[in-house]
Length: 101
Image (tube, rainbow, N blue to C red):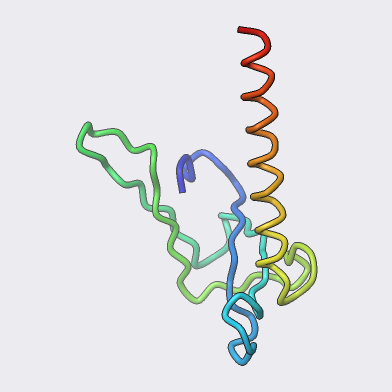
């Protein structure tokens, strides 16, 4: 995750129903406080010596059930909706930029 050493929370997808009939089902979307015991942030040093990227390690972490965004086992749908919104926002920005310049 970029900038993880500068934030307090992250969001992630995790499989919550391993018996789901399709791989994209049975995944939930979570928010996690990065101060939770078992979460470690490890900066990644690139070839320039910069540490803009970080690896987040989850080691036997318990995330409270009330930190699920949306419905349990429907995280993939939520993630795809968020990505569509992000792409749409980018397209609006590009269109606006073209009109201005």
